[in-house]
Length: 262
Image 1 (cartoon, rainbow, N blue to C red):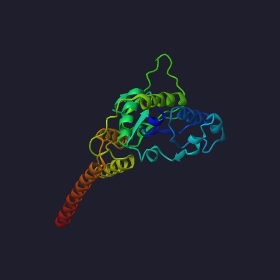
Image 2 (cartoon, helix red, strand yellow):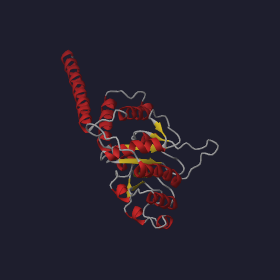
Image 3 (tube, one colour):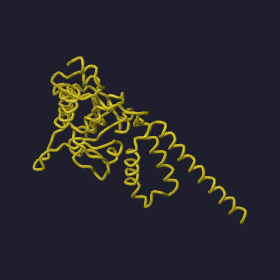
Image 4 (cartoon, rainbow, N blue to C red):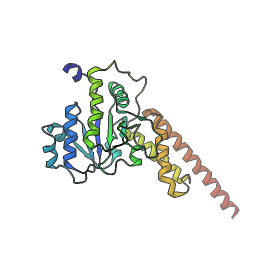
């Protein structure tokens, strides 16, 4: 069984957004080690990094903390990943598929078996995840807990998702391999989103201005569901460029006409 686990798909990356307590970070590292996950990333930990109390709380899972990486933003933390699910109890105005940890583990397992990098994003202890960060993900994981008591701590949430992954690794049917080219990584998609938003801004699309943030989030979620490959993202950026060039020519002609009339 150990050989099968070693040869299995690469486990998901665990990303903690703005974690507050060193003890919680260490507890997450401990449960990750319990279930064979090793890649832990932090986004702007409140008290900085490293923190000695994290190693104490990890109960010997030092290798997870020793290799931990810190990022300035969720976008940077997921830039090399092709499939990321946001773990939250509140969808927060996004029209993304909502799945249980078991359903999500199956999808992550299949993608990882196709040599794609996958991950799970968890919000901070108090505030959870921002809608802008959820919009960078490809779905939402919600743990089906009893509505009479919604409280789960960070390590518990990570443990439930890690357990479902481990169960698949130990006793899974053959993975469903992707056909065709894989989805583009997060950095490619973010560049495409920002390119589109710049040109839409220049064209006056974001009106009224106070709705720009929500409109941008909705566009990112909508385009994210399409699972663009790198080639498709490049083609879409070519379309954006062609449209912006066309708008520039129209404006130049109008300016020239006005000059002639003057």
